[in-house]
Length: 259
Image 1 (cartoon, helix red, strand yellow):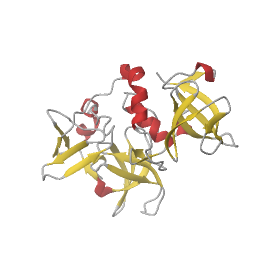
Image 2 (cartoon, rainbow, N blue to C red):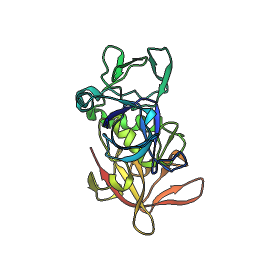
Image 3 (cartoon, helix red, strand yellow):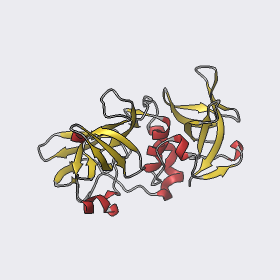
Image 4 (cartoon, rainbow, N blue to C red):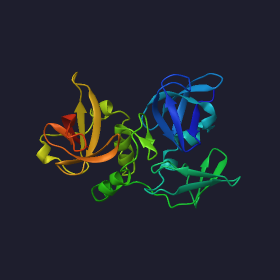
């Protein structure tokens, strides 16, 4: 079985079961690498390279690559920028529109490559750098304002709470795990809400104490998060206060710092 693959379309759903009716647990973006663990006629079970997440997908959405191409970390540094017009053109002349933070494998001199297939990159990509975090985190997060909430989503066409912070952090050179319940295990504890600063992540729990939501602090009293859509709400020691609903929508559990 050919193990090493890369996503060859703009957005590919990753599902909990091998069926088009199955729940979307995450998405692959163009250039995301996966290992194929199992294969049926249409479906394959994959594990993502960037966050070790497993799910089922249609294998027609993948491009086979070699072991060497898969493991060449230096060749996956360039990503699409924070703008709405990230275009690729394949050799047949057809256009792909990519979400920000999509990976451009083997990018060089205006082209990227998936296996033997070449794509012209029409907009200037960049290599994310964590040293830009403090100056760019606010604008990067606010770029996604009003993107619709989508369970499992990772693009500006639809994004969930943990996909939102994972994507913002990726664009700033930091790798986070996929789900809020995983993300909360990393980072340094911020003792008090008053000490929170821009870019910290706030995590929220349900009645059973399970972490079910995450957002990005813009200050110690404002948060940007994906709930219905990516929105900015006030936050205090109790949690997020939704002005539209005129009530608390999420109960604050802990704040973590990653930078």
